[in-house]
Image (tube, rainbow over the protein chains, first blue to last red):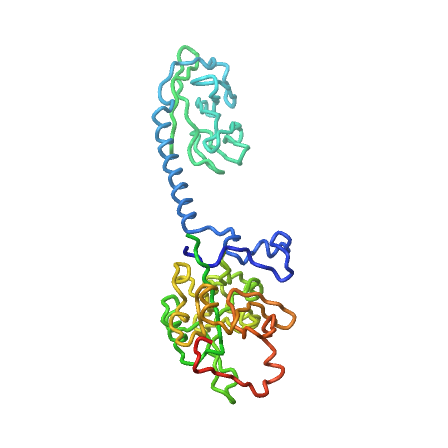
Length: 181
Length: 208
């Protein structure tokens, strides 16, 4: 009742329909119904749905943090102390078989161990003890080797540190410390 | 109930030049103080005859076709809208291109403004401002049956010729019923000035 003239597509100077018109007319149609315009309502829907998705994502991150595997785990013997000379690297899986870790003897004799997954997008980092860093090849991330802190590239958090214990010549992994700074 | 199709009928020969439409138009809140209707003198030197000019709402709107900024849009029911403020670049292409001289360049706003047949009113079932106030029926908004009944000596046509361009419009122009014309030539008056234009006013039969 409201609209007095029936809805009808416009005419074009050559008399052909919109589908037969040149591309520029199809890209910029003068009729409002044929225009792919984002209405205020659609934009508001988009905003609400996207911000809702972000809120759900935050809740998901919080929920997973409740179940994060962290702290002390059953001990695992990684290597004999005498086998790990300075500059040498031992790979191991800890705390479960699908989480790779790296045991590194630094040049000064100190033993350090980190989870191998880059804190940016979980690529495997490559240790370069003679250069003094761990390198993530995916996005050129760099971690300094003595503490595992990020020094370059996209990662912003340090690598998870594997806590170590040395008893009677054997190196044990005893726990995982996830660090945010 | 089947909605009655309302149309705009224009009969310049009934215009008495009272300016009511101009003032009613400028009352509108969407463009307060600025009239979108033009009240033109047909031949100012020779006659006091005036003619109102509203947007004819072409089926193939030339103004929208020439707009480089895609600012002039046509609604689904065939009303050509005034230029969109965020898009209009005030280039005046539409002003130059319109066969009827309807678009107005408002230089103080850098915006083209034109008649949109009071879309805010007509889309809710009310009549356009100008048609509600016109005392002589030069501007009429109603159904086709109504105009048939009221104007028995006239008939509406919506075909116009502008040079090589044939224009079909939503707004109807009333022509004498017996006249054989198929279309109104918009530019004819520019080429040969009318020599003697007898206007017979039948004052005793205002229904005519």
